[in-house]
Length: 289
Image (cartoon, rainbow, N blue to C red):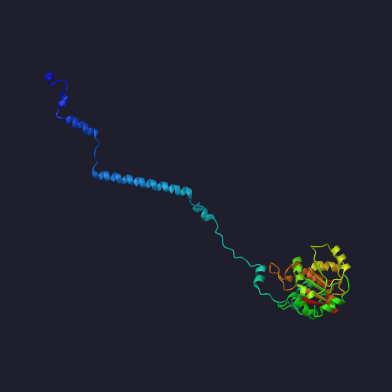
């Protein structure tokens, strides 16, 4: 009976076993809803991965500022804004300029004398109101002011023939201001000889020799150099008639002539070195320009 079936009897079966094998080789089909959920999860995963990559690139290109730890923040003292104090320059710059008057110079000079002289000496060196010429009311140029206090200048300069002695001395705070004032003298000086009297451009010995060679009408300089020349007898006071202080001018820091400590001291020394005695003799007038 077995021989009648032959060797290939299994190939002619009803096909149930072949179908079973095919089913095994085919992929198992998922439920439609489960398939949708899987696709959704896949999309979310891809989206999150893209977002993370983008965030990482932004952090690399723009790193966040370093944050202080809570401990460091609590221990670090908070800085208070300090209110900026006004300097003397600020106060002077804001204040309106006031024309000088004899009382201003008198107060400065008496304060200077109080540290070095007795009461009797201070009384002898006191600056009287009669020692002063008309003061500048801030409306004058240098030339117009000098014409007011010395209207007969042309005659005065012609009569002056003494060497080493000026008729008019103008005192200011710096070499640059000296040059500026000399330029302003153009309409006043006429044929007068004007000399610069400051330390930067010439040694004092050389300047004394130059003063001895020619007639000097107007000297414009700093108080220190003028005082030194008087002390060394290089500049004489015999012909002096006017001492003009550059009183109302202010420097780059808004300081007036007597607002600069060293200049204030030098001006007072100059007054003490013979000017006051000449004023007492009614030979010299002090002007505040």
